[in-house]
Image (spheres, each protein chain N blue to C red):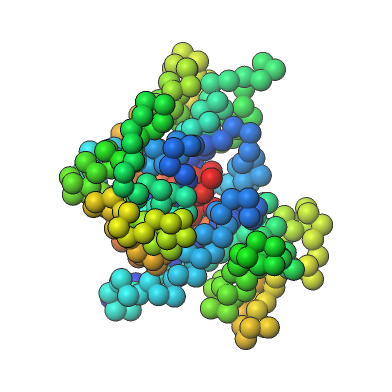
Length: 98
Length: 120
Length: 138
């Protein structure tokens, strides 16, 4: 399946994320999930970014929290709400929220 | 163009998850899609009329009503969840409908995509 | 032509502090009356999967009614089995919490139900997720 995951948290969800598999997996960081894309702890990026997936971060939620595209891990692409709509309809058959 | 059904159970004025649902609805409508926004649980707060807009709090009522008037967003509140919280029919914002939970399932039947934002 | 759409309710959150799992159950159960909104013969068929912390919703002996005057998740799970919904519980997560089958809600025989819940490997839950039309993570 082609699955888009809206990840809205920073500290939780590993129990689900570790086991999620899909033919095509997209992870869209929203809400507090954007910290996965922009913050390093102990010099290390979020381990989620090692997963085999396409990574996106919602620009509006990133900037709300004081980050810009310059803060992003190179694996993550910044997308607006409009681009998120296109991802939902064009790239993924199913979308979930964590 | 397609139909997106969003179910949002998150509280109004608190986590910004309901704000996300409304902004995503707006973006989808702007792209020419139709959106059903089902609010249940604490999300039924969105259906209550008389919300005041203060800068310290997210304010969704005006945007929601604009989108409903535009014709491509339908907002429906879970009747049981609303009543349990003391929101009666006469408390409901103009344009917002109220139905039982099976309405949400029926909405997903005809949707191209469904995004369920659970309660918190 | 009559169509059946399948919805996968994947319950991953613990009960009672938040209402995600309760609302997932009540929405899944509402599939019994959805046809009033649909064309003749069209149906919505839910499958309910408990994964991760969500398996804790399936513990027997919940006393929510006694202490909070609230229908327990246990009762909702039994109602779903009474209505013959497909209820899957993740085997690995049950084992992770050290929960025996005897401690889980496996049937609704006491209220006349004939369908049992199934403890299945996560791989079967993954298959269920792939087979449905829409996924609702709760």
